[in-house]
Image (cartoon, rainbow, N blue to C red; front, side, top):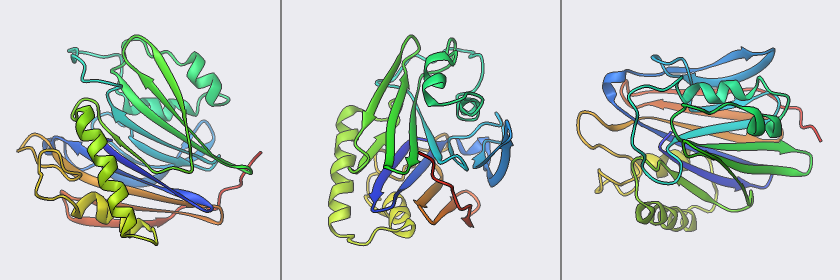
Length: 244
C-alpha cells in the first residue's frame, strides 16, 4: 500500500507491497479467494473497510493501490468510500479502458493504482493516478524494475533514493524470488526507521505487513507476512489462462 516494488521476469513478474498503517487498525484478513461479479480474485482484506490494496485475479490482472497521487494532499474529514473498494470495483467493468473512463472517482481520496495484465504477447503495465480532481494514466515499461512509494508519506527525493536502493540490491541478487524481494522489503536499510523500506514512525505508523506475488505463466504464488502477529502465509493460487 505504501511501498511497492516491481521486478520483471522472463515469463512474468514479482510484485511486493509493504502496508504502512496505524497498528491500532488491527491485522488484515489474510489472503483468500473471493468472487467479484462471477470472477475469482485472491487478496487480503482490510478489517475496517472491507477493501484491499493488492489483488490478483483469474483474468490475468494484478492490481495494487498506494495512497496519494503525486504529492501529499490535504485530507478531508469524510470521503464517499474507501480507496480499498476501488480495486474490487475494477472488476465490475468490461475492461480496463472502460474502468478508467467511466469509474466515478468524485469524492474519493487521491491514490495511485498499478494495473498489470498478462497477455500472450507479454506483460502490460499502466498506472492510474487520481489527484482528487483529475485522472492521470501512464504506461510503463514492463521490462524495467520499478519502486513506488506513497505520495502521502515520502518526498520525491526519498522515492528516487529507494529506486537506487533497489538497483543496488538487484545487482547483488542475480536470481530473483519472493523470498529475496521480501528480504529487500524487510531487511534492508533498517537504520532508517523513518524513510527506510520497512518503517517505524512510532505507535501510529509502521509497516504492518508485506505481501508478494510471483506471477509466472505456469503458476502464481503469493506470500503474505503479518508483521503484527509474526505469521507467514504461503499460497499457490491458480493456473491462469492467458488471453490475447
